[in-house]
Length: 505
Image (cartoon, rainbow, N blue to C red; front, top):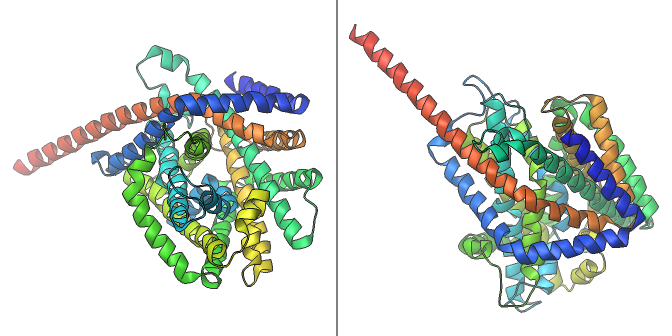
């Protein structure tokens, strides 16, 4: 029933966006401003708490607990597992913002930093590490670990409600179905926004390379084409289409990054990575709790709070997908694999693309800041124009964005299929197709209505209620790990006692 209600709510939002897009955008903008102003502190404390919790659990006595039975082995190799994590998590975002965000922070830095200076360049890189590093992956990792723990160790269905239903408080258990509905809504809108963003960047790339007009008809066609591709991938299963595409895309992204590293300002990139990693580690607590109440600037709300809410809204989708592909991992291996490894990949990516962009903007006067101001989607291609083999790299980047959209899409329809079938890990093909068509319909209708920004804002607004669900999932996970560790400890003591008795005879 909650799935039907969720789908009905999604349909109402879509109709609102088509009939009165200005009204929808205005309402969600007001809600976003109110949530950011009044609950920004809550997002900061919650995400920092999840980072601390994730690392504490990884290195605690609970780290050796396995997600599954004692004889369960991982379904995917370490390389394929990482590729799936990366592709489902934030691959499209890294490509879209790899150049645009550092340049934007350089021109419009955090409060207290002079714009367009060496200091603002350092702050820009430090904050992109912060926004795309361990904090978002800790959000994804804790949600994923909670789902995986109850699914593989307790035999529960792979749903958000499986964790919250284990809590001893009757009102929480009564609302578990609502929590699953919130997860469906957040996932559908988040992926629709991703499809729209991907279509915008692919359209900008085709405009740069082939002269194709940047227009709504082209963007609609791109959404339709990518939907067909990700549905073909999704219906073939995780162990076939999704895994193959994820592996291919990770290799393609690594090749593109390597080419930019070699052809770009190599030494400056290495220096950028080294300096930024040091400043990030030394400033991580201050950045984590920075609310800037006396500056009068909206920078923290526009960027950090926006991102924290965005990651929270994506956590049911990414978390359930990560859980789906992580049977057989220990908790320690799971946390380190889902938090540290993708964070390091993001640091390298931003050092290469963001470091190159800042170097060229500052020392070679390549007009990247102007490109970002005019159209964020063109920033990456403006960087390529200033490098050797720029045309080739632009074509590769278009394919990279396309495949990241496809891998996000096929991961999303799998997750929505699981949610729609009460946790079936292999949902029927027809369910996947329905969700794929529905996601594409959301993206196309809102794009045509000019409501893509509104649906992104709506996703952020939906993050606040789900943030409280994450707290409940974390409490449930802690209680479950504590109980299972005690049970395993008792079994081990009993086995040792029996061995001693046998030896004494």
